[in-house]
Length: 387
Image (cartoon, rainbow, N blue to C red; front, side, top):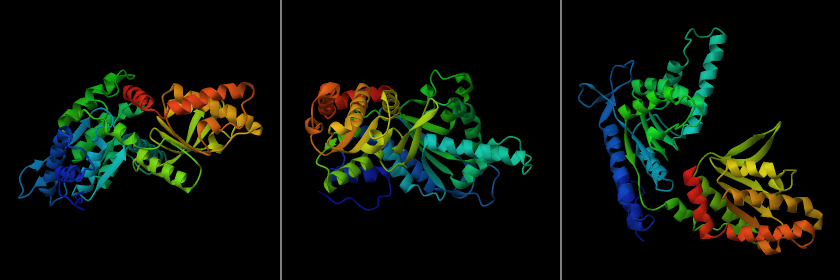
């Protein structure tokens, strides 16, 4: 296997190096997107800020002349085609001092926090500017002239209502946007409440970014995940290491933090979560008084769930046994991908088969085996692609 160069000047070069080394499979569609990203890199290298600070913050071409706007890129296509990988390659190479790479929903949460903070300042008399959007956009641009968004998806009405105004300001300042999404721009916020108020944002995107479809025939995420162990036994250091490696592979470097799933008058605590992936210790998910509705909420919220350190279950752990049965049922019905580390194989987890739990656990064993199969994985991926 040939060594991969530590540094390459273009996305295309890095893609070629990874293909030559055997890490990636040659993909014409990916190289097409790489070329468009490299065009932006070239524009960034061939431009410099105006000597006199402009109120609009435009970038000027070398040698002076008219202000030159750099068009961004919006890459959409099915999951697992390499969109995020290509954007991350681009982001690392972008020769611009102020840049930000974020999950889109994380970015919008930050925007709403900034708007709230501005309104509080207005309330305290610390500012006279009643419209929070221009100063918020200016503050964001001051921190990041290049914005890279992963998983651009608009589902929240408050996000939908603010996007056109926010990005009118950001694009006016000269901000460059590179984004990945599972849907084409015209399908963003489809069937959303008051969608007519969101449509100007779609038109705005068309003026400031180029739109390209990454329609590779191969689902590389599915291919990658298929190589990961999904049921690991026995419980030892190797099992812990394997679960940790799988977790890093699934989360792909995204920020992990605790999360609360709101229920009626209470919440379900998730110790570690990011995007559509959650991680639990057996004691957290089956050792606490959770019911079927709680497990259904987890299954609906997450695509992938990790459950670590499942012990052997004796008669004294009847409650934990029942909860494990309910958990597996909920995850199975929603076609959630499940990673487990356990003391023993599924058929040996229950020490004694007796009563209703013993009968029902046979179904759990069967489902735990099926959830490791290629057919189940394919069904999981197909279902999640439609969401």
